[in-house]
Image (spheres, rainbow, N blue to C red):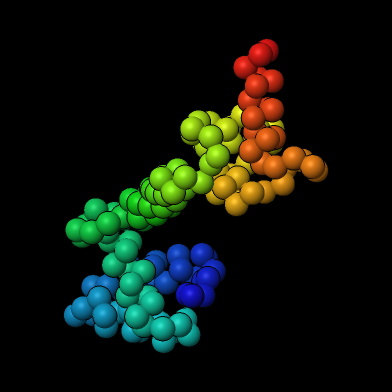
Length: 140
């Protein structure tokens, strides 16, 4: 896993690259010079410069904001696939969708825990607790 770098150091490196970019023939050369001065890897600085160019719109590629949104959507997609797999495998004992039953519980419980038979209340199974809670909310 990559190390977290101080944002101030990253900003300083990008500022130094911007100031000295015209003095060197390539981005790699200026990144190496700045990296040597700051004591960090040249490839790290070069990748920061490339990503800054992409974020600024000077270079084609996926911006940082787009990458964050893609990560968020992939996580949501993974969660929904897991929920669907639970429903397809017959993970609940009734014909009602398990997600509806989970939303009715107080506090809400992740669907993946209900199908494992989580004991939400002493003496009652997760299904019984969900049924009781749902019936109480529907009656109100």
